[in-house]
Length: 77
Image: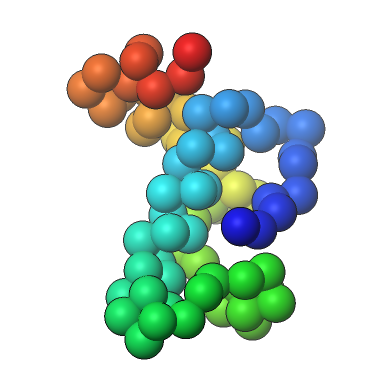
C-alpha cells in the first residue's frame, strides 16, 4: 500500500482514478516478478496522468471520467 498526498482539488473520484492508473502502470512490472509495489519504488517512476495546458493536473477530467464509467455510482458508497 502507498500514500498519495492529498491536494485541495482531489476528490474521492479523482483519488480512485489515480489509484487505478498507478496499479495498472505497475501491475506487470512488479507483480509478474513477485515483487511488491512500495512507495519508495513509486517515487522513482513516471505515471501518465491527465494534465491541463498549463501543466497542472486535470482534476475535473479525472472526476468526470470516473463518473462516466458504467455503474460508477456504485463505486463510492
